[in-house]
Amino acid sequence: MELECEGARILLDLGMPLDAGEAGDPSHLLPKVPGLQEPDGSLLALVVSHGHADHWALSAYAPNLPTVVTGAATRRILRAASRFVPRPLPPALSGRSEGPDLSDRKPIWVGPFTITPYLVDHSAYDAYGLLIKANGRRLFYTGDIRAHGRKAKLFDCLDVWSQGLMVHSCRRNGGMRYGPSSSWERHNDRGSPSSNTQ
Image 1 (tube, rainbow, N blue to C red):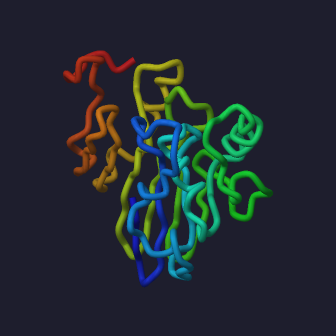
Image 2: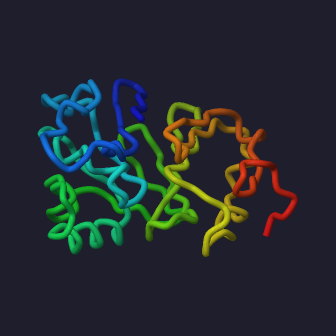
Image 3: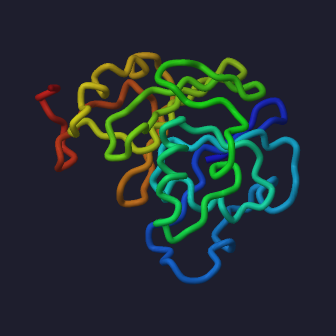
């Protein structure tokens, strides 16, 4: 997802499609976003919500990628696992961190964007939802979020649901959900509203 404010841009996740396979050069899968194939100073950063390849792996094929912002633990895990992963890490993830690290509920600033990460329940360690504020507008990007795993209480602790902001969520089937936070509620594994919020 690309966000723009006052001529500055950030990307939220740049992952490899799950069905891309391991053979061949996937650079043709890069979105047509200025700053990925050719230099563009308006692209300030890629913010990676967590360490699953469907959220970061295409970034290795973006030769002009600026700073990569992610959790410090995600960065360490990806570096340690890089010898066992079929796709390369982008230089911005494999080297020393250039930008700020995501940490639960500690805002960071990238150009006109204020990004507040919220630790979320997901199978990837150090996974975050991101509250992005810019120019008086707010968006909550969930990355991958669930409310039924071993850290399910984190879902109930999110204080963003009542803020009347727009929410963007990636779903397992590749679809996306975008809408006001007031329409969100906990669902059971079948996608039906659940009366149990524990």
